[in-house]
Amino acid sequence: MRDPYSLLGVQRNAEPDEIKAAWRAKAKTVHPDQNQDDPSATSRFAEIGQAYEVLKDPERRKRYDRAAEMHQTIMQQRNAAREAAERAKVAKANAEKVMEELAKTNAQNAKSQAQPQAQARGQSQAQSQAHPQNQSGPAGETPEDMIERIFGAAAADQAKAQAGGSAQPNGDTVETAKADPSGGERPPLPALAIDLIASIVRRFRGTTPAPEKAPDISVEATVTVEDLLKLNTITLKMADDREVRLALERGMTEGHVARLKGQGLKLTGMKSGDLLASIKIARDSHFRVEGFDLHTTLSISLEDAVLGGDASVETPEGNRSISIPAWSGSDQTIRLEGLGLYDDAGGRGDLVVELRVVLWEKPNEKVTDLMRHMRHGLYV
Image 1 (spheres, rainbow, N blue to C red):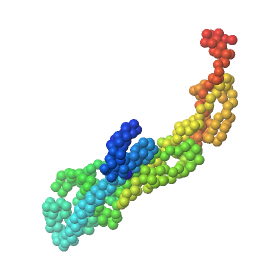
Image 2: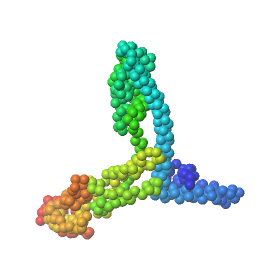
Image 3: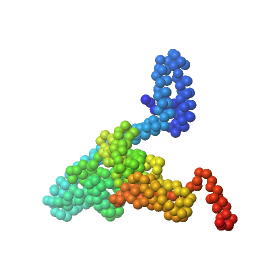
Image 4: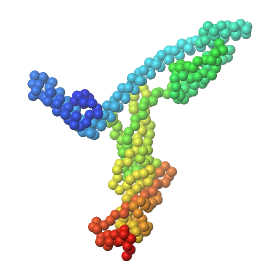
């Protein structure tokens, strides 16, 4: 089916009423009864109906939006991969040229060994001034030393690190520490030149770079308090209809991000990205989560708040009897240790019981009279 937003002629942020109005208008326009001479009217009318069925249902609309966003990301990454391949092709061609020049330089070095040292130095200086990229080094100079001499120590070190798998730092240029043969400061090399030098280093070492990694995908993983207490395994439904299983572990709570390697975006010729699952705890009828602690509310009567007493409270491990201290107000809590979620230190959080003082369902005349006397300073 084509894009339902385009079929109905609405924006992607359109409200439900706007979508419904657009569907009615389109349906009237393309209805087969109004277009009896058009053989495609029936199929167009059905297509309009299918588009409305997708967009009027919030869940189906959300799934479609995620899938459309994923498709757009995939297309962008494929274009980026094609552009990267073209850049790599150009860089490889440039590297081949430099390799040829280096081979010529090595041949010249071997030839110059038979000449007097002074003549060799003069020839080397003349070649360096005329063709800086074709400098010849002393006999026995390694190719990597030659790269350092030609391109500079800092640039060569950066290229060697990049060829070995280290990440290129942010920035478009790399400052070179060596001065050029003329005595001036060598200008910064662009990042493309660093890539070129790195290609040469990899050629010398006989290594190939790791494949480029596809982008990661971030999803929201909704779990229950029971899931976290039992360390269950949940299933995540992806926009591309894949199902990914996430095993809950100790240390997971609201906002925790679990990384599932290789479960993200998958593109041909690229290393699969990761899936970043952000934990979201579903609303629970008994407990509220704060970090690794669970909070629950316990209603107590006025007499228990003033005089103290015993009460039963629900915990993740069943009902438990607790003692309420005398003179306990609604701002006080009772902490039951080790009855919360599993933390990342091998222990558990606590169950925090929040007291709430409540009055009787019907007014009590004795209590009302007592409060009245206390307000006016008369004590019985």
